[in-house]
Image 1: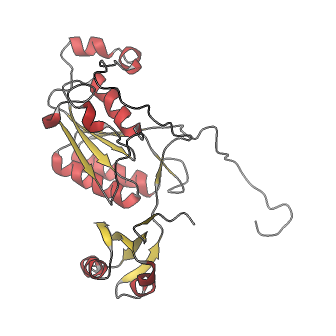
Image 2: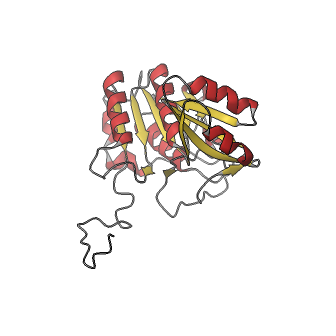
Length: 254
């Protein structure tokens, strides 16, 4: 049914009213919940299945739902094993964007903090000081129980490209899987003074596809509040979707 299960617990989001979130959080920890993350009016956790009925009946709980998960373009490629001593590789993006000329004029990202939101960060620690900035300038944080898998490197690759384009910028890696994690990552970036965010991910059924909807509204509000720039991918699913007008020719209600 699309639910993620971990250590015998199922990941769900509890949507709450008013100030009910702290009480729901406390109940979850007491009743076997793990990796509890609260963002906005949504409390996310891995919950024992036997506790779900009781959770849905708590005071202030509006409903319990499956989390909304971020998606990568398919098929996601697996990375080859990292070879120690590999020389630094310059991204194709440097030439394509004429970044070298900008760097030569002193535009190297110095003083800028760049956040990368992704679902894969395999191998990031092995690349510090080579393909990524050294440890003091690269910070990683996982949300909602997200964990690193060695050969899943999409977000790591995005960060490598950013480092090639702006070698003196600080990079903040936000490892997410769900909408709740995404909200938490934005809050973290705001607290760290991040200036630019890159998110090369897709989200299904969060709006009509015209730049509006809950995620677009959240990004717009975050950009305005933090005087920042937010860059996201476009066209990842351009060959895998259809849009148009439908007509109920046979009158069956569909």
